Length: 388
Image (cartoon, rainbow, N blue to C red):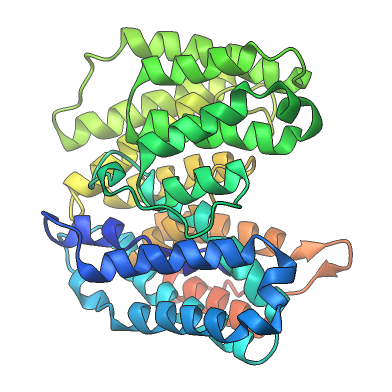
């Protein structure tokens, strides 16, 4: 799960909104946003990040991130009434920020830069889980340099919970015919990030439809993207008709989430078909709402697993990469149970795939140990099964 949780230092409002009400932005949060802006500017250029003249400043920024993450007390997020993913997040946070700082100090600048570059996507993944928590557009926090590329600026706004500003920047990219033809990856990524905010954060089918129709107006997009967009538009139209359907109970939330998952499965024609992504986004929203409203409820483990399944489908095309966190939370919530084993199987498979490339599979020792620990926690006592 390397680098996945590093950026959650900047996601502390995500933690705070679960642990206690937020009536104002604390001084620490503002410091974190300023540090994020500075680091994103420096990491946007490999030359700037490796420039000896910038070394002291960047090292100080990374030290600040590591120090502040260490100061967060993960015990605030433990207990039956807390989202079970939050305590795990805070633990990863402390480890990963320290790793980034240490790597930079030891001269591994490109590795450290890669970790830093993962921050916006990870922040967005946490911040755009649903509509809970404050939005900070009125603060007007900007990156410290105006030389960021449009998509970097958009991701900065999304990472710092300035979702209205982020949507405006993403829409500018989506409307740009030149970007759609010369940089299709950035163009498609802008669509997907924008849609995630519209569906999960805003829960606004009208905004989601506007994004899709803007993208469909491009005459230079890839066929597979247009095919997905057309199905998304149909799914959004159906969503508009269903707006009055609001679950009232734990059973109601579970039933609604499973209905959306079933519809998504029916729509998919093959495993990598992403025409059902609107349904998966909506389903993940419902499961996360259930987790928030009933973290000690009877359906919590199933909700965590189903949320992981949704996020795993979406992560294959750059929405986010937090499904392993969901699976791990499921394991820790219901140890030594059939559902824990199911979540472990999914966690193990995803982890091995993420460490597999053209040279084969290379699992670091700490990852092997993590798999063994989770396997031991999952398996029924006395079972003859073994791992590695």
